[in-house]
Length: 459
Image (cartoon, rainbow, N blue to C red):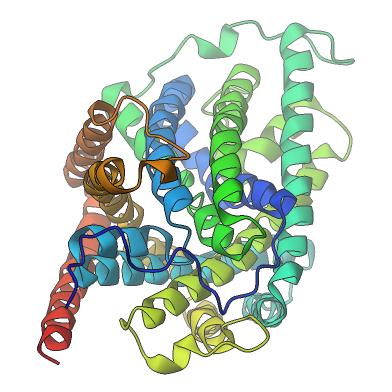
């Protein structure tokens, strides 16, 4: 049996999947996949906790995400695969690692689909009071399940236009915010630095809470390396998408937070109640702008649902292709793993029932379930890159199209940052339960993956 630590297997791309995604699709998936509930809605809680220092929180977490994406880009450009980091972890450490990273991320994406569906339904029921929330969740799930059962180019077009709308809206928001801060927006006066005086209103404790909120808002950017395997030129596609997306995401996130806390007092209740973007536009008094931003938030949530169903189905497909899941999930029809799409949509439909049964607390329950999974995935990315980079330098240096900066120093810096986040989560009562639930799930998956690896080794 060949060693799992060589750089000769598994294959570099998934031949049975369609190669229907174009470079413009990948670029927008890279930008749009991460612009969702975490930015438009979840950032409000971070601002309430950290105040104006939320800008520092987003800067620190953004730097960590840039390092993670650079590492992932290096491996994915060398070995494009719909399994992305899961396939890289298997290549570096064996099937148990790929199993653990892959199925952890699958659970994260499937749960996120349900959360985003519930969030989108809350917006619509705010416009149409009296309509049942669960019915809207069901409608959204049917639409995006069907969309993902179709050819992958249809998914790419959905995401291209969804992401274009989100990127356009944030760009316009930043432009209006900059004009208002400069005092040249009609009907507004420049606030100067008046809202920034109480920079750390809750001290370092508030900054820590804001840091954790900002960190998890970045989750989702990994989808572009999954999608790259179905593009016309996987190597060029992932290299270009990773290079361009990182600084753009930093501008959107950090720039948005700077505009919001400069224009609106951090303790304004509407920041949490309406979301920071809607609250800021309402504060500026631009007619209809707040309601228009609600439409953008709805689109962002629906886009994230679409992207997460896609990502979950491809991760499941890759795991099955590598012998780490039920064979039925690997069946491909028309270039699409349709059974995997249905399985990945299942939990979203479960959320229809949950939103009917427990409408008041289901969102928090889902958040606790998956709270720290993205950190587990990032750790697998970093430790896999440490090993695979050395192997690539020895055996296939021509595949290093994207290189991690200052290797291995910055890889170790990123790992230290992730360890620090785990410590911070453990110290916060609000996030400790998320750490425990994620830790328990990871240990169970690692044990199952190791047992499966031993069984396969004997056969």
